[in-house]
Image (tube, rainbow, N blue to C red):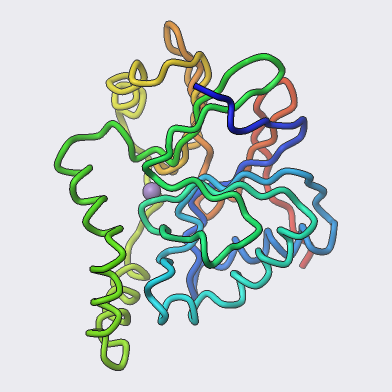
Length: 237
Ligand SMILES: [Mn+2]
């Protein structure tokens, strides 16, 4: 498999910010980058950055416009890589300068100091039913149709309200065992995922597993410089 991505020293990973009207830490983080209070040459977005975003759903593009614009602005100066998640997909036309990896292209094989690393949002290798569900919700014709049917944004507003009410920050008790079941589906010795909101780094027999914490849940992101380090986002008030 060809290496499609080269990770550089001090690259920053963030995951699962679930941006919406209530959860705005993603926007705060991007502002820190814009003001250069946080320095970064390569930013890797591990998915579910927006609580809901697809190219076909105009209501959500409007809702998220502020964060979309800032991200596009930053992508002129910073190399940004975006792994689509289960809440944000069909993004290529929204972010022209960002390297987007759709679910079907994941896991992505990356290279860092002669080591190969697999990266994906984290909702792969679950089960067949979930895989079918994923291809249905990403179907562009279906989404376009729903957009036409979405008279006065009624459907979108329903989705939005239910997403806002969801509590997503919780500890998964047997997380190590859950990942154990799928870890051998990857064929690299390092695996990076988001999706689970745990932020655990776990050593298995053959694999080092990095779960990028949810910036929304724990206020943390990850920097890679020889090793992976969790950093707490500090913002001036
Ligand atoms: Mn997810």
